[in-house]
Amino acid sequence: MRSKLWVGMALLVMAAGLLMFSGCAKQAVKSDAGVSQAGQDAAALEAEKARRAAEIEAARLAAERDAKRLAEEAQLRAARNKFMNEHIYFEFDSAVLTPSAVAVLKEKAAWLKDQPTVNVLIEGHCDERGTNEYNLALGERRAQSAKAFLVNMGIASARLTTVSYGEERPLDPGHNEAAWAKNRRAQFVIE
Image 1 (cartoon, helix red, strand yellow):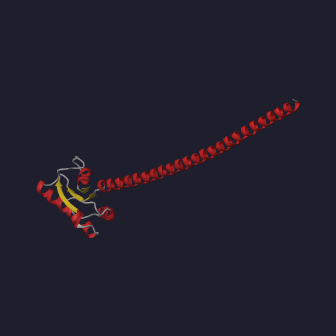
Image 2 (cartoon, rainbow, N blue to C red; image 1 turned 135 degrees about the vertical axis):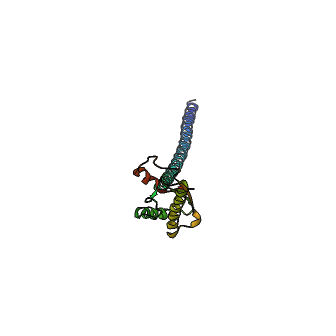
Image 3 (cartoon, rainbow, N blue to C red; image 1 turned 90 degrees about the vertical axis):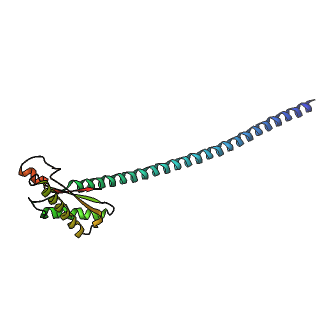
């Protein structure tokens, strides 16, 4: 009986040992699966970080392009405004270009060469002295004088049109020499 007891105890110890080893094996497999899952999670996290970094870089480049485009548009607007707001002035009863008018027209010609699609209306204006008919003719001569200079500077004649407003559109409504000097002008309007 004692031998049966020893055999039973041996079997019990073996069963406990098997149970312990099988439990460890399950934990090891569980642990390997956990390590494998952690590796997959880390790889997915790295891929997500790389994707986000690429999105941020793309957004930064797009913002730089937009800022550059806006700066170029602002610069073009400023140049257009300067072109249209810088008039040339004439002496009393004259359509002859003054040295300051020539300097302004040279700048306008250079800008027009850089902007080959821009067409311009040149308006001739006069002060209030003289008859309406005379001032309309003088305004036309002033506009034509400016146009001829620009054509001589290499601007295509087809891009330039002229009109005379005579004394009809004064820049300064005053009735003195200072006002009249401002009104004897040619203005440039981008069409």
